[in-house]
Length: 64
Image (cartoon, rainbow, N blue to C red; front, side):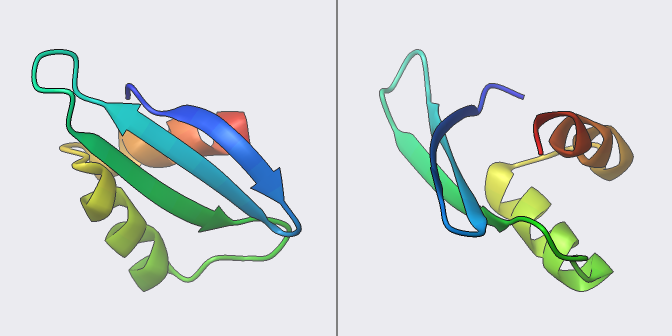
């Protein structure tokens, strides 16, 4: 997915993506330790630019 964990503070995981060609940076914060609603999860996936929601969910489960 290209995102790297950059910080775990409290109950949140912060991820960062740096575009290899443009240097544009995207940061997203994901709540941990609680169930995330489907709408919130989809919103976070959209912020990450995920094309395949199910694949993104599997990936995020691995890093949480």
